[in-house]
Length: 352
Image (cartoon, rainbow, N blue to C red; front, side, top):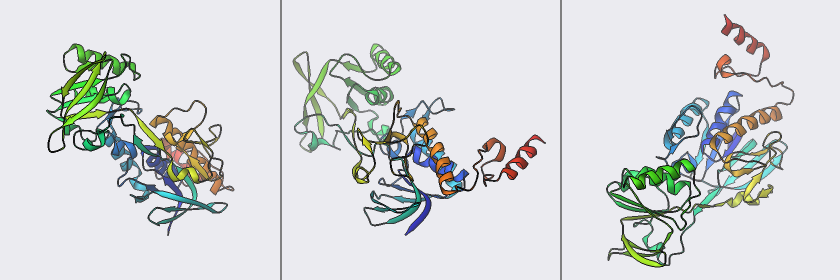
């Protein structure tokens, strides 16, 4: 039996930052995640990918962001249940929930924060008859270690942000890189489209549009060696070492969908007018897994949401204690005890 104040489902960036905001209010946290390591999609799918929209960091690698977040929360000593999936949730009483994992680990908490990102997810695979035979033998749906592609012939297919971003990143690593898209227009960020176009004009990549991959060929050992592509109804063979189709992910809520939460378009509906609470009092959803009007699936938005959530939980669990927002620039990280008198002392001390 694991007992805590707040049980967080999801160890991605938003889930990790929840520990910090809760820790400032002296609330203990425990995190469950189905992956064997913290970091969520950032660690599992693109640890080396640069992120550009974290305030204060013009660019930061995904893995580095996770390392920084963990360093920030380590002082609050959160607990972790990794490589286990939360499958059952029961409300035992007003402020007591029980969550059981697929391996039978029982957790009890006064509040639950669901920060599961996109939930469980699977890549959208192109409809190629023999593609499964080449998976992990030249066909990869994610780029986990860019160095694996150094000096190799690489073909990327797709027209979204991931396809464009990895084309830009791998252009300096691969011996040759070809980007194939079935349309001449891309749906990714304009800045990325401009960078890819510049790489084409500089002769650093091959850009083939509108075109599609229609077949895969391999050697006697079962490894990918070539693709059949079609452009303007003309087929040709393109030799390659790796084929990376980046057509997006299919998100699935999994067991969470059966917990009695209000679901809208595969996301958990929350009340963004107040505290990002769900239709079940005491359960909250933050980050990419929630939805509300004008929702933006950005890490920085998840950070904002969870700061509000932790304040709401504090007031819910301490209804007779007046909450006072204190700035860490005044009180420091260790000065949060809910006392107005102490806050006033800290302000005076800072002025002196």
